[in-house]
Length: 347
Image (cartoon, rainbow, N blue to C red; front, side, top):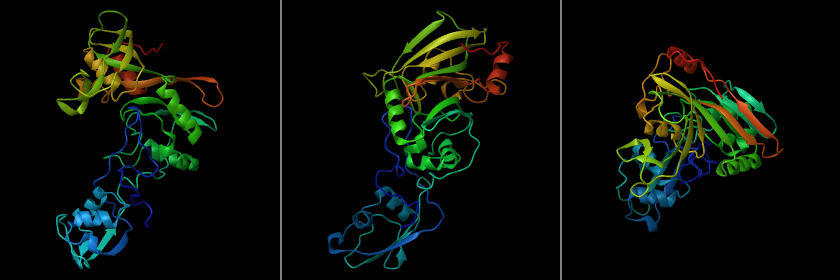
């Protein structure tokens, strides 16, 4: 069998289990096939498949591959029936017909490969890493970003990462969010870190620059469920759980400084929902600078959402030592602050 061909019918990359929480987004199956080496599979249609649709016959004859993948082969003209290419899944086959499949790897199956890159490692021991992710770096391969991700860099940095699901990534940051992440270096540490996150024992705090003058108390706690925006499936939104699917979410927001134009805040996560801080800040009428998806606007060099994971604290799952790390906000955020006459400060 050709290396890199899909190995299951579940639509996820080999070795990548489903993730229970919202901190990690599982990649969906690719619709494209890689132009690379292929495997030719020759088969005869058996009596049980007589008069069946071609897609059904293929699913029976090649059960180790997903129907979605086999449909991709059909769409690419990589299936022939009695020596002629066939594109229609509804074509009926007869017992004794000859089928040939040219099986090529999908982009997704080729995504989990080492790619050398510079990684800012804040802390490292034999069990885990803490890295400072720059804005613009995708954490995990997904449609539109099948290469050049943090996962690819981790695989190149340490060959042992190949033995750990998702190269040890246990939580994520959005592509355009910068800051600290913890990464496991072995399976036991990964399982322990996942448990710590589930128990809310990994403390994560962010710095954010948002539009609008701050009013009211210096500290606000936003306890509002988050789910898919029923009016725009590309966004998340605060939802009524009686009417829409979603999950509880809580963010504490601490005002640090501000002007009539906007505010500089610290956000503490108590849950890890997709786009949680961005959605909760928008719900307060303080969309993040640069976050055009949720109502923000760019400010000078700040063309992405002004969000930085500056503090990460947890008890080491192996040594039991209390660890705390901080990373200063990147230059684009500091320039945006300065343009409003605010100086950089973190609690």
